[in-house]
Length: 230
Ligand code: CDP
Image 1 (spheres, protein in one colour):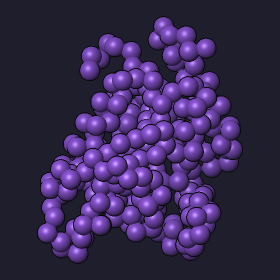
Image 2 (tube, rainbow, N blue to C red):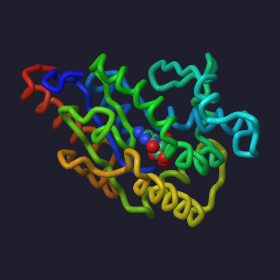
Image 3 (spheres, protein in one colour):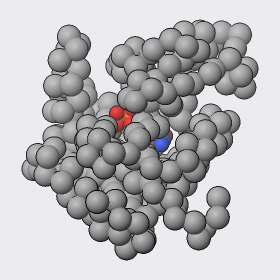
C-alpha cells in the first residue's frame, strides 16, 4: 500500500463493551460504506480451535488449524468454511479464550493480511483493537472508543441477556478486565490508542450521539482529503 494514496477507511478501536460494533455498523450504513468486524475474525479462529479440541490438548496445532479455515463475509455476517457462525462465536466460552488466541503471532499475521486486503479495496469502516495502529495506520480517520468498566460490563450483560444467556455483572467485570489486560499488554499489536486517534468516552453518550459525532468527523476528514462524500 502506498502511504500517499488516500484510503477511504474509518478505523474504530477500543476495548470490549466500548460500543464499537453497534457504532461501526451504523456509521457504515450512514456513510454508505462497507463494514468489517475484525474481532469476529479472531472469534472464528477461537471457535474453530475449541471445536477441534485444541484446548483439550487435541491433535491440531495453530498452523494446521489456520490452513483449515476459510472466512467469508456478507454485511455483518461471518462464515466459517461456508457456514454462518455469527451467533456461535459470541458466547462466554469464546470470550474467555479469544484473547489467548489473538496473542499468537501466526494468527495475527494470518488475519492482519486478510484485513489489509479488505482495507485496500477502500470504502470500509473497520473495527478492532489494532486497526489505527497496525492494520491501517494511514486511515484518514481513527476513533478510539472508551467507557467505564462498569458501563461496559452492564452493556455486555444486557447483550447476552437478550440472547437468553445470564451472566453475573461482577463476573463480567472480572472477565472484561482480564481480557483488557491481555489485549493491552501483549507484545504484538496491543490495544493502545494511536497517537492520531480521536478518543470518545461513550459512558454517558447515546449510540446516536456517538454515531453522529463520527459521521461528522468522517465527512470533514474525507473532504479535507479531496473527496466529497456528500
Ligand atoms: O465484542 P468485544 O469488544 O468484546 O470483542 P471483539 O471485538 O469481538 O474482539 C474479541 C477479541 O479479539 C479481543 O478481546 C481481542 O483479544 C481480539 N482482537 C484483536 O486482538 N485484534 C483485533 N483487531 C480485534 C479483536
